[in-house]
Amino acid sequence: MSDRSAVVPNNLEAFWMPFTANRQFKQAPRMFASAKDMYYTTVDGRTVLDGTAGLWCVNAGHCRPKITEAIRAQAGELDYAPAFQLGHPKAFELANRLVELAPEGMGHVFYTNSGSESVDTALKMALAYHRVKGQGERFRLIGRERGYHGINFGGTSVGGIVSNRKMFGTLLTGVDHIPHTHLPDANAFTKGEPEHGADLADALERIVALHDPSTVAAVIVEPVAGSTGVLIPPKGYLQRLRNICDKHGILLIFDEVITGFGRVGAPFAAEYFGVTPDIMTTAKGLTNGVIPMGAVFVRDEIHDAFMNGPEHMIEFMHGYTYSGNPIASAAGLATLETYQEEGLLTRAQELAPYWEEQLHSLKDCPHVIDIRNLGLIGAIELEPIAGEPTKRAFSAFLKAYEDGLLIRTTGDIIALSPPLIISKSEIDELFDKLRTVLMNNI
Image (cartoon, rainbow, N blue to C red; front, side):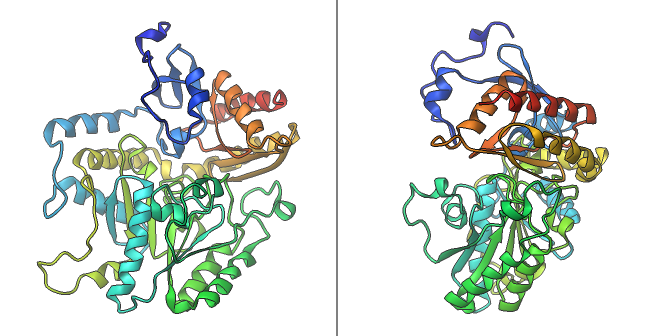
């Protein structure tokens, strides 16, 4: 559209925007008016290639007909049904479809509305599980430095991004963190999984010994740490975490809010890495980002441990008004059908070599100090401007948007995660635009 006044509000002050430099944004707002497949259209009619799948979530591309129609039909048939002591068929149908994709033995899902809610649900499940097993002394939760697990109190507490934590006081008690896996001196410009760093998992042994293993309930990690700037796990690292948790009776939680639903070339990163957690959190790609919804997957033995006592009693005192919402369930079913029909849950594996080649071709650009990739995820780490951290990457974000490319930045790292429908020609377009930005960045 050429007439911005037709779609842009005349006052932007009321909306306090999340994770946004509000004052800067409202001086020169960046607004999308529509989207289709791989591209956004801005309010002034420019097309912008989506290099981030919205916010790691639009895995099947934008405004896909099957998903759109499913939402429209469901809204006209059953708009809402309570999830407490009542149900509707699509919530159960979706759960059955989801567990078919899950690692073997993870046969139950609990619905939430976001990744943040999925994480807090998983943490509460872990604590409650140990209680019903007669081990209520297991109250400690262990996260990882530079980890991101959403923004609720539990997720912020186990998360390890300093800027996300420092304004909120002590948060939850009984939380500790293992080291992150970023080893730039040893692993810079690695293609795929790094060779060095599996031994970093052994720090879990030290922390467990410090606190006494019998007090530790769960360890939570992202298989691939996304929001902190795409940190790929070293070879063997996740298996070592699994082994240590098994040794001490600690639950292992994988936060697959980003990696779930095809991002790494398999339905879930657990399958890709061959390591099955006890609990797995998802959201984002579950509904293609169209309607808020999350799902927490659990091993059967965890679910079954709660199914004791009188049958009329609630087994797990937890849930949300919108758990398994009918319209979200319809969107989830249509999203899974789209993934299946187009082979999107494994397409990243097919495109990964080409994606990797094009991404690493930017190694010669100014200020590039590292490049990382796995599946259809990529990161370009830039040398910070002295005394002005984050400015170099944010300047690249602004220039890329002007040039018709959406990227995401965290610190001085550019993160990329395009819709899984991206073609090789669109990969070329993405990296041609990004090369121009980097060659002319400050």
